[in-house]
Length: 501
Image 1 (cartoon, one colour):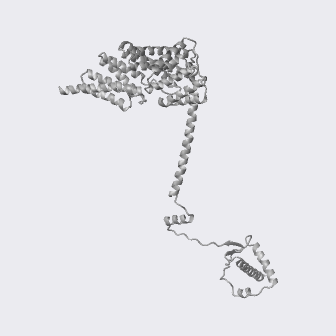
Image 2 (image 1 turned 135 degrees about the horizontal axis):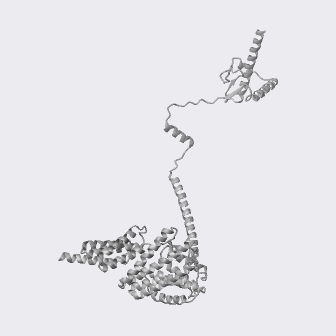
Image 3 (image 1 turned 30 degrees about the vertical axis):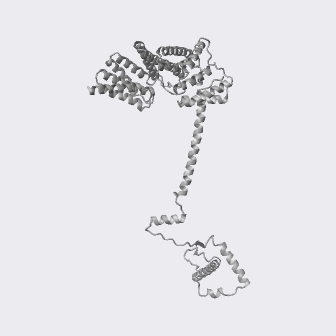
């Protein structure tokens, strides 16, 4: 029994080998480029169906002509092989070419091979550089154009909201010309560009039927004369402003017609006859002062102070202690009063009325100290609701220059030093070095130090101080240098006489 079972097992194995050889032969005839390894169920027998591994008797069988019955049998077997090729047992595995790697790799060679295989082109070629440059230029032009348009739109809205034109002035084009003139006049500080737009707007308003005696037209005429004064076009300004002042004074005695000059604080700062008088005095007063007519300048500055005090009363009537803007508006009224007080003190000093001038300059310093105390208690106090210009800067130090100058005129050089030291602390620690008043204050203190040295007989040090004062103004592109040049020339002449002697 045992021998019989062994024989049957060997017979089955031989039959399976013959069957597998026939399958391999049929597969090689269909796709001879694909080679397979065979793995039996037991995993002990393997065969390779290659072209050169044929048995001796296989060639004679392949050359025999096949009959129809043989073809039917072969077709059945081939279908069976195709069905069982990729499922169950036996299993077939595709043979891949063997890949060997070198233990010593060359990075350059590998990079070159990868570049050749991927066909990588260099990025910084002249064509790519031109292409990237063109795209960058297009982006820059696009964002610049968009940014400029956004800036212009927001600037226009800011002007419309902050400097509204009176409703009685009609005409879309004329109103936009007013906004454009305000932009150049207030925001850019370019009166030469603002003046033609003001004049064109006035003509258009008058053609639209605006009343030439209304506050709105007088305000526009005042802006035109102020721009002309800043440009040095003084012809006819005195007569026009004097006539306008008389009309405004007559209106101040009557019930005043008011409209909002600023929508941010429309119930706080009115464009009334008092407001226009205060603005007019800032142009007409310096005009008389430059002419040397101190009596007329004092008269004009006094009228301006009266108008500001009346304006402060109108602001106090609607003052709200819970609103920070009311404190800011009242602080602006104090600034207008302090500025006119300082200018009135200059006129009295030029008239050699030192007692009145000293009182006015002391009052100016007190106004500045009150403003600084308000800043300490109310840090949210704004410098200006519209132009954001702090007019308080160096106003107290400018008054100190005149106080020191009067003491030197009276021969009290030691007493003037206290004002010089206090004033220089304010100007030297100030952050706004481009402020014209601060520049003139520093130059004025240097001049007073030169005068003290001259009184003490130290002419060499006095000449150095006078030159410093002149250079400080000259290097900061300031005008009206005649007084400083005269001081330097006078000391140089004195030094020449001393050398000759």
